Length: 96
Image (tube, rainbow, N blue to C red):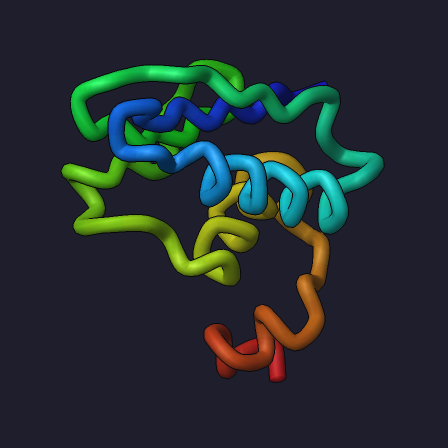
């Protein structure tokens, strides 16, 4: 089962943001994920990977992900046929 890792900056005090995102992913993908790990880092890092492949990086992607966007990126990797309900309807008119 896929492993999501959220690396966050301890100097910036982003643990609460990282843990909230982990909780959201675990709640949404309860049966599709094997693990969500929180990895302390430094230097302003906020990076999210699935099985080592980067799906979000704060410096590259311009800030922190909206939770709906993050869930869509995770879904696209771990359960591409899954409908995310209102998240998809708001951001994906083709699924309305």
